Image (cartoon, rainbow, N blue to C red; front, side):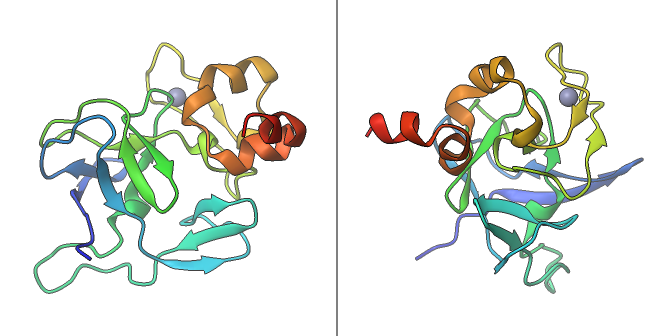
Length: 164
Ligand SMILES: [Zn+2]
């Protein structure tokens, strides 16, 4: 199986980011989330299940300068162009080569290890990013289809069950 990785790591004042190395259509995979499963969140983990967090198994570039786990440098945005789906980042907007790739941390993280003030500049910016656990019902509804299933089931188990 070919591991899909259409991300490369860049840097700028303020830190790293990732950008697309080719154009990606809505619904296509941008990056496979390679890593090892951990039970607790950390600064560089990504949540992939209610009690499972992914941590990078290799966080340095290979001999060609390509990061094996570039996803750890994916920034949060309140108006992102990808979402976490299983063990993949999937495009929710068309992405052009060179575009920064972001996802909404509050659609995958329940309770973040390190909450932060968002400066994404989106008109819908929620400013304080702490995790899905801390969102209001109306914000949860707005995020709707891009939220990971385990978070929806955590807050509304009966509701989630009845849609199956
Ligand atoms: Zn924001």
